[in-house]
Amino acid sequence: MRELDVFRAATLARQVEAETAIHNGDPAPRLAMWSAQDPVTLFGAAISKNGAAEVRQFFRVLASQFSDCTSYRFEVVAAGVSGDLAYTVGYEHTSVSIDGVPVEPYTLRVTHVYRREDGEWKIVHRHGDSPPVEQRPLAEAVTQ
Image 1: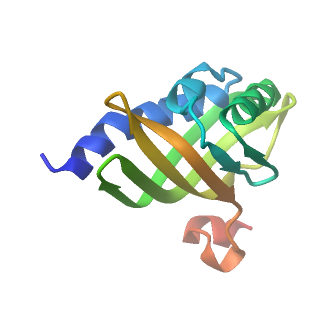
Image 2: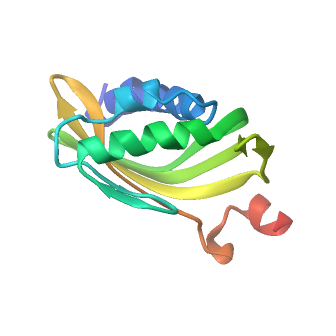
Image 3: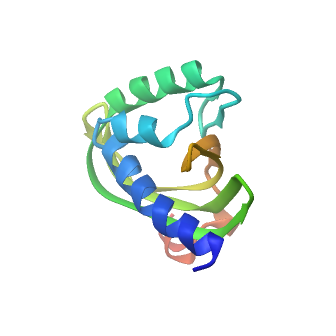
């Protein structure tokens, strides 16, 4: 099995479970996916954080705002592995409630950087934002 296939099999299923959990108010699986060793950075759709402690605290606050995730899907567009670093680029499609209020399903385009630590892939950077309308997946662009 190629190194990229091993990375995808070992990491992406855990990541989807972690993202579904945080969108249901549970930050623990996402925290387990992320490195506790700096450097760690987050360029979020609405906020940026720097340093493992700051990022991890933000995830706890973020989880407290989410509930009732009815759908989460990570559409990987590209991924790669080189030594102890890996990346994914894709779209996250989410249906969730924020502060107890259902919101319209939304899509974020996301990039993750992973570092292998003690044999396990950990996320060390995330950049997420809303794609421009002309770059959104066709089904979403049509319904906007």
